[in-house]
Image (cartoon, rainbow, N blue to C red; front, top):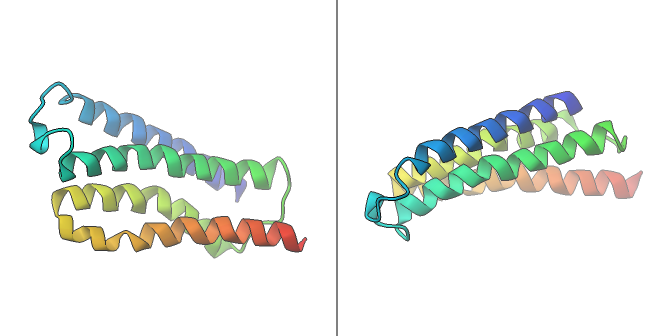
Length: 126
């Protein structure tokens, strides 16, 4: 499972770079998407950085399992963390488009919180 987390992390980094490059094409335009502090622009920035953040969580999981040989959480828990690498940026970008979709934010939060808790609990119980 460590290799899957490692690949997910690198794909997340690629997503972060590409989305940052796309958003960066417009950074000089003060009024783009309603200005720097507007909801759409903030959500695009959050989605961009989420790929890096969740990527680092997946990288941490890969190192924890593969290098430090900590006990692996159940497969479904690992899959949640890998899914978060797609779900968090997707919810951010969707919320930029339709603010009501911000109601979906509990999904990526659950996808990140449960694996972190599971890793800590598995380690403490081993």
